[in-house]
Image 1 (cartoon, rainbow, N blue to C red):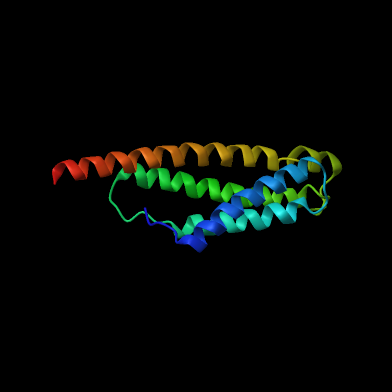
Image 2 (image 1 turned 135 degrees about the vertical axis):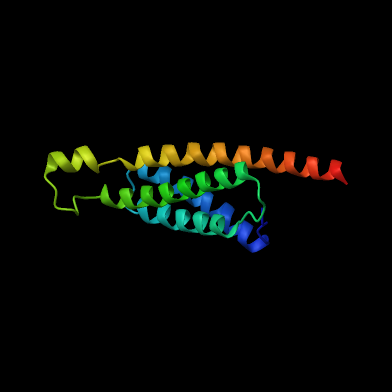
Amino acid sequence: MRQLNKVQNFIFLAGALVMVVGTIASVLMWKYAPYVFAVGALAFTSMQFLQRYEGTNFVIRRLRRMMLLSDFLFLLSALLMFASMGNVFGLSQIDYITYIYNKWVLTLLVAALLQLYSTHRIDRELTKETNSSSKKL
């Protein structure tokens, strides 16, 4: 995996922290919480897009795609947070509550689980790949 430099790593970690703050603020019904979460999600996902895998290991490439799917779900969660602020789509009240209102929690949960799993597995696969290449030398 291509490593991030110090500035990119700081943006990556700060984005993750801002996403957590935005999530907590949204639970506490602070009206600017979606903006905070969206800034964190943009910073986090943009830095994760910069991390590339140039190898040929199929497992790592599959896990990387899972990680990119979770990034998309983080951005979708930010969009759904904004949509939960009010019925901006002009739906009936029942449809709005059924399909939009607070559904960001579900997408955020799925994104977090995918992120956690893929990060753990990528680390394990990279370690395995490094160990096997060092044994060949």
